[in-house]
Image 1 (cartoon, one colour):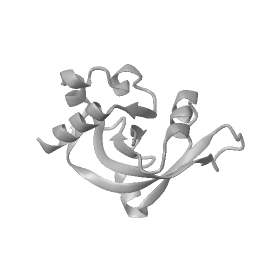
Image 2 (cartoon, helix red, strand yellow):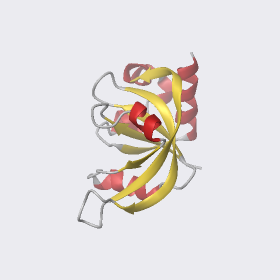
Image 3 (spheres, rainbow, N blue to C red):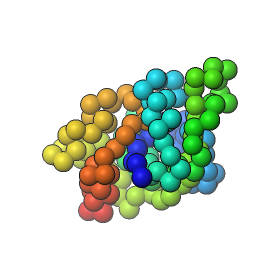
Image 4 (cartoon, rainbow, N blue to C red):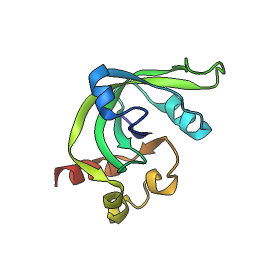
Length: 135
């Protein structure tokens, strides 16, 4: 299993939207690195759902339920989408400041490539985020 962080602005698509839909399409990605990460996602991989821009924080978890396929929002076959299923909201949101302040998370792609909308997360980083959400 691999772990990921996927980012969305709450006005565009929120964790609450995914919860209502149960399964949502992760589409509209137009960055080559993020697209390549979508291509690496496998069914069953877990994703941290990150609310960007407004009160940035990791707010929940979702699971990849359909691997990459042509993004229906683009005429260019190079762009892909995946389907994710709502898993859970975190007990406590993990704000960006808490991530920046945590010495165990200093190598996270979120801090190194802040604009990347789909990024890998190590097992240790994933576990640390979950630990922070329990405190």
